[in-house]
Image 1 (cartoon, rainbow, N blue to C red):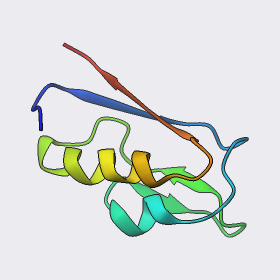
Image 2 (cartoon, rainbow, N blue to C red):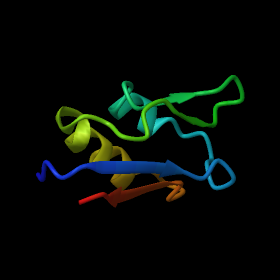
Image 3 (spheres, one colour):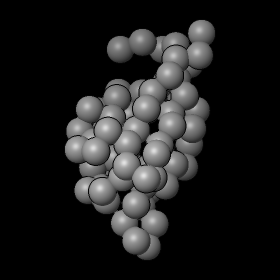
Image 4 (cartoon, rainbow, N blue to C red):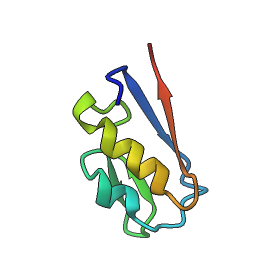
Length: 70
């Protein structure tokens, strides 16, 4: 795991509403009433990076993107 700054992006057009992101990293992701992803924290703290990476890996629609900001 790296502590480099991390930026998170989501593409709601790709989201299928599976909810894995909100389950795995609730401090960073939520779901709207329709079930689609809502990004709460585009620059999560280092303590949340592992959960965000897991949520990204588990997203069945590849709606989450990660970018390091060194």
